[in-house]
Image (cartoon, rainbow, N blue to C red):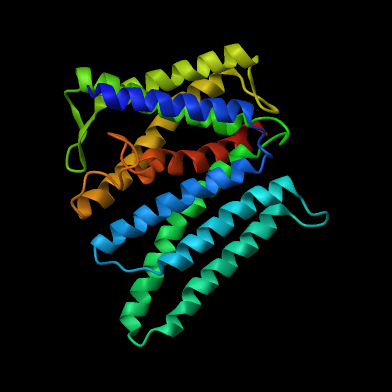
Length: 284
């Protein structure tokens, strides 16, 4: 095991946990931090695409992504009487998509224009749109208090990742998807589920079976303890396909052994929308 990687991971986890536990969700530092994460991850995914000769309007995509993430926080912080926050976000999404496609008129080569629009759209949807659901989770409940739903998701997914790493590196013998990610194993996946379920049990014990303003019985925590690592692993494998396509190990190099920002949030990009839907259907 890479001890330096483990140490850095624990330090990053401690800093993030402290910030999420202490800083109210409505504090201006929250959207700035969430936008920074989105911007770095989008820059990395566009760099991956460029290595695969798939061009994109990077400035347009990143600007649209940052605007969408910021607006997701703003409509929760400053609701407009008579207007639905979702309606405002869907309207903004449509405007961003139209801008991306209207840029087709700026190219003389129609095929290049189409590839550029599709590349820009892909980067926006894969990172910014999916990441906006983490922002939605962050702003659920009282914004004068620290987030609960987003913090739980981060704990469940990242401790699941840690469990998969520890159990897989020690006991992993049966490969999960060797063609895509040779190091992942079924034993590691089961370890991730175990760690995530433990997080759910401890959360219910410490919070009195609540998730912010929602009742959160133990059986919901156990269901999410199984599903979140599965969804998170699929998100990780999706990014692994992108990296394998361009023959690189990490999307960037933010910290030793941790890869880039996209490597850090790849599992959250898929787990956040799933958990948002789960809360809306089963906890509300």
